[in-house]
Image (tube, rainbow, N blue to C red):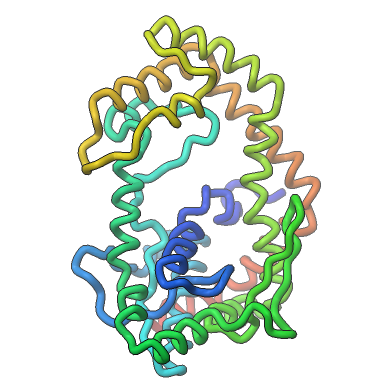
Length: 311
């Protein structure tokens, strides 16, 4: 496996993918779709910006894909505003245990950040544009963006754990990726496989008896702090959805206790060690897909930089 400098963007916990899925859901787009096209940006919607010159390859590839989608939609008679990869940069996921005390003190479990994310989706100019079009025109915009996943030559990918995903090979999403990566069927297959490796890895860690043993010490620490939860997931699940953008004091106290106990008992270090171990195992199992994705991304990077240079 390549070193950290070449790690592909799928190792992040998928915020851009979540954003795309949420936007697609807002407008009722086809499955496995990207957010539909846009007319006028809302003042509160975060605007996408070109990545800095020293930006990670992942950000360069994502931004270039967005510009290519915009160009394709324009050619088909519609408008599209590039979607920012990280509309709420502070939003993080802690799949095993919240282990960042400063994050806990500021955001609790991050519910207010997810609320901000939802607000960004509600203000998404692409979804608003599509909803504002006459019904037939709006449906045509969605088809231009997503195509028909049931077409005979649709892209197909079997994901780890079973299940087959399909996407139109004629959509603007596909056209953008074809221009960037060249071998579209291969790109679709390896991205859908590797995108699912995070969930596979996390599931393996949570099922590891060593993680369960580490949680035992964490649970005792939490009990001493006045909280009775079986595991970090139970603590997180006890927190209600936020009703405002202010983090409740009780949530902060619980989150800080979780982070403190994670550090005090070593659960944070154990989780990181197990995560690295299971990552290696998962990558070894899917080494061909991982290698193919890295190869396709490396080959696409010069094209992506050229797209961004052209605006």
